[in-house]
Image 1 (cartoon, helix red, strand yellow):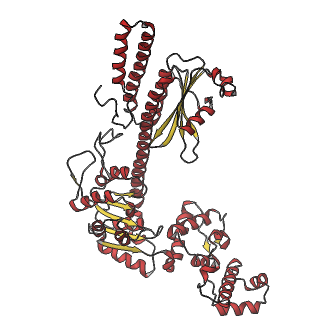
Image 2 (cartoon, helix red, strand yellow):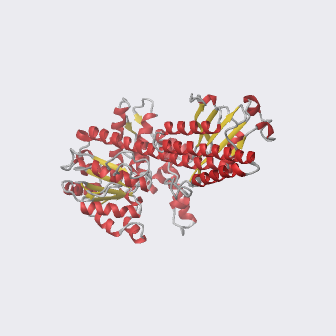
Image 3 (spheres, rainbow, N blue to C red):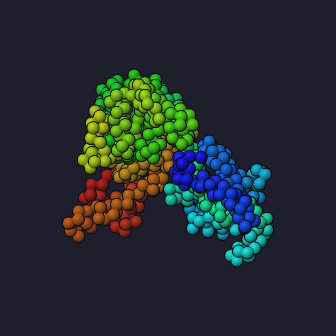
Length: 555
């Protein structure tokens, strides 16, 4: 024990003050030899010895739970420790679901270490709910003397006499609860021990959160690795730059820029709305370059917390932080000789931007916990749906990093501003998904083409892709896709959105009339007679309106 044992340990969990307990126990032992009330003193010494035994056990358990990042193994060690210390017959650990706020069963064991199935979770939910709400531990040594619990059916049916329940809190958030019970009155645990167990609960919560985060990090890593392998296999011969779809002048200009810079190692900054195909452009640059035989590694800077993003990018040394049980290379090293695609770069925390700028300038990275740098040859392509220049002026993005990334800027216009690409893209996705679904490729009716061209496409190419896939999936063997297969794309513009704020009543009515006629013509596949009948006007009147508003079907 050190002088710091009565303050905090390296996990930030308050210590139980075991050195003070030893001093107190020694004093009582000395006094018991001379005190007239020796019996009371001996009882006190025995109580202190029992508490010391609990602390000693918890110290051993603390070492044990901090030595694993396997969540299932960790939960088992925690439950076994609580059962052992409290003398209970059964122990349960329930974790809080962040989405619903409910406590869900995670693990249950008997005193001999045997695991109970989840359908065997017979415990007093009233106790666990009380602890979850109050965040205060509960210990009842004799349930028969507790007016609130002794009549509860779960308690009576299970013949429970002793109950203990401890909250697991981390940074003010409830992680879960530990519950233990027995059909005998506890002789090895007392209410005075709750403070010790509460401290253990806090440390256990830290260990659980670390294990969960480690598991999430491993899942992300595996996903990135699988994605990279899949992309390399799929795109090596298929993802040709010439295979990109874009007939509009804007896209042709972008293709020209890609041809000029693909063979260089210059950084590229791609800006555009969500769904415009920024990652597609990044892959086109990579696979049209001399780096095509090396990896292109992608990471979404807005999808990961700062600490995890930093360790993902730069790697870490074993022991650099809790959970770093082995050396691990970061994505810069994984992309050595290839390309690193930083998606949503505008979401990167400012203090992490400094480290990224240093890596770009020096061509070196330093793993967390190491004191030396490693050289890397990586081309960085970044993308964002934000206006980074505006973010620089607001102070949320570093000016020097912006200039370093923005050597070759590429702005992807939204799909609504390049209508020439809508139908070619639709045909491309029809071909793609017909092949995947093993269906004959259907055509698009004139009305369906009209609808696709008139839609706003706020989700851009990704929305169009999803619309085609959905329509084809629900087509039921049709030879042609009509408006009915794209009902979910029906325009939802309000009247206010269609006219100017200062418009007169007459102009508003004209806009409304034009929009109504257009929608009804599309719905009826441009059958003028049928549409006239639905609108309750003559065929000639409808023809006049069509001519007036210059409404023409897609050929």
